[in-house]
Length: 140
Image (cartoon, rainbow, N blue to C red; front, side, top):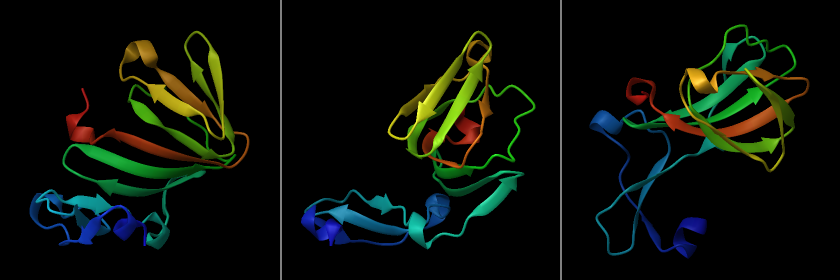
């Protein structure tokens, strides 16, 4: 499979503080380093609000998410969290205080945390995003 083509060998499943990491752990050949593999296809979607559901994997420092927004989603409050990711399918707009940016399939999203980057998602069709963000307790 892909892991063997990349020279990766099966490793151990996460334990202890990394127990929240889902998926298979592999390690590069001749290395003690372990690399978790996220098996998003094997995970169930979790509804987190009207019109939004996710598949989430957390480590102590980072959170990786597949997020699906549908037209029923309305963001009422300004978000000040950072979001870094990629639009896998669909299109959405992000409204900032001074402008609105449209993102479509293939676009990267790079939004810093803080009041100067406050934003709201405007969803008019189903859109799926891949996001990597600081785990909430680590966000500044």
